[in-house]
Length: 499
Image 1 (cartoon, rainbow, N blue to C red):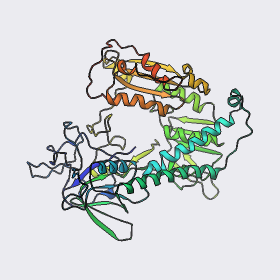
Image 2 (spheres, rainbow, N blue to C red):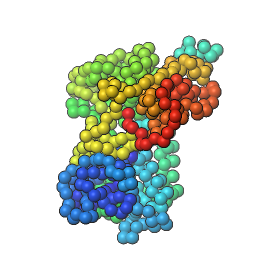
Image 3 (cartoon, rainbow, N blue to C red):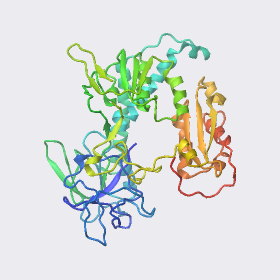
Image 4 (cartoon, one colour):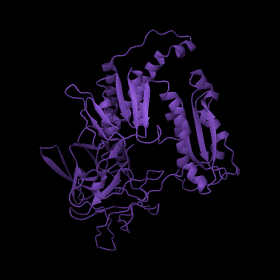
């Protein structure tokens, strides 16, 4: 997922300032607006100063201290100014220039046009960014293949439907083409949507070069400088490669290479057992590979709810040709060459990192900008979610409700009873603190819960919502109905609490 940050540069040698919807800049050198948006910064986007500072209209003294990202009054927003008629601001080529045409940049452009802003978007590679070209889209195409392949290979499963299927096979290039064709289709859709709205798509690497000035162009070619009232930096992320790991794109690869599916090896080692590692293990094992996980922490899927993690391990790992080593670090990985195999000297493996945020003095947690439950920049020290153990230790009363897919008619009709949903909530007022789902179409079902949290909806309100029968949505229905709230009276809620 990508988001964006709206900035304007006061001069090539002066600090960056943040504009509010009142037309003034932030009044404190130590804060940014609660509406600030990010998807990572990289050093190519800036020249001159590397210090993020705010500029006060009532105080002309520029500060060079790094900005700490904290919440402001909700009335303060970082937005481009609205002209209404779609014409550019007086004295500028554009109201808004967006550097990066990934999903975050694309969404920002659509919103800007809706507000009547003359908008340009700069992209040095292809429209769609990581998600469309090297991430979410092709990975889900490969998972669609692996799911069908696994189902066809499961003779017992097919017989339970009364079906007889001959031995299933696959064409590697055909599978790879399916993923690439989907990415191309989505990429073209995004490009056409920008063009139809009149957004100028400028090709080249974008760099902020001065006060509200951006230059773009291809390496070694001519460059063009344009001006904009506001600038959004939406440069996305790249695969994180730890020190000591040598990537050759053939025998040692990143997720970018793996999604091209140029080969299906007999055996592959995946460093890191988060959701990306799990996705690739699903694809490779369905296509016949054996998989070994190397996980630095003491358990597989360390970021998951422990109960969900154990269920996922029982269903997605144990029955398959997967073994694993936990609590070990891959300190060095050397590609195969000169007839020698890949060697791994048993480092902590991460997945993605923002592009060079440290170069602009942005404080991060594990390489990422801390944000709250609404993707707003929060205190740079980080306001971490309250885990169940921490909540109980601090006397914060919580309760847990669970429901099983084995009690859902639709899931049983599909012979997909392995699954569960788990609700964490406050029994005193019905506030929903968190929901975990493992099972068929969990990625679709979770949105009802995430929307409830985002809107501050209480259990006593949502438990009476109608869910059609027989559907998988009844998993969520039963989950909320099983929760016991002491005070059933509904009341207006304030801003939801991050979990």
